[in-house]
Length: 230
Image 1 (tube, one colour):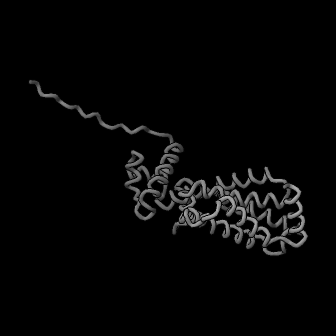
Image 2 (tube, rainbow, N blue to C red; image 1 turned 180 degrees about the vertical axis):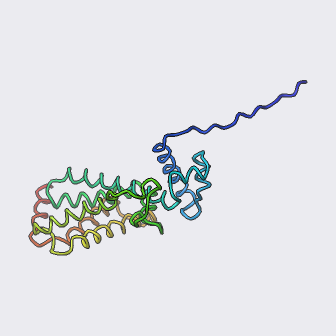
Image 3 (cartoon, one colour; image 1 turned 135 degrees about the horizontal axis):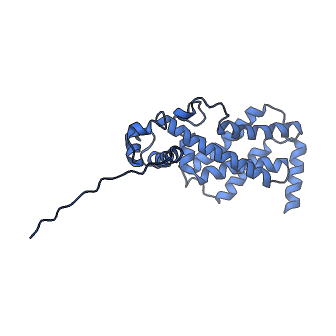
């Protein structure tokens, strides 16, 4: 009986354009970060997952932290878009702020792993570090800065209109951001912590946060508008 000869076909990895390769690296990195954690994920394992050498990986990103920052950058860009969409659908300046605050919570809960990487890892997307070798000299504002400024500008406008209590718009924006982060991080870390209806909890959170900043006149107007709407 003739012996069968098995011929192994060499694996040929598809050559991708630089931008498409970057997108592939980021997509696979998200999966590996979720599977193994930030500390345990290595550039070697990521290269194997992408079908390229570790050296080729470094042609696109300076290191693991740079990839993480790129993921964070992408999340912030998505957040800015969510803020912009929310503001367009709101009826009135206070409702606009409320819609932006709600968008922050909804986006985080819809993308828990990206939220973890952006806000709940030692290397945060808020820190200032290069995204990749190609972007080290970029002079444009980062998406995270744009998203924060979008919120801060609306707060400053509300203070000028006498709808929010006088204060530092930047500090107030940071406080709002922090309260949203508290709820989102709790829910994605301990999903069973909330016993009540989740939508009711989110609405209560938003109401408490907003009403704590309103002037007396604005609170009366907002309450009247709410009663009229129902």
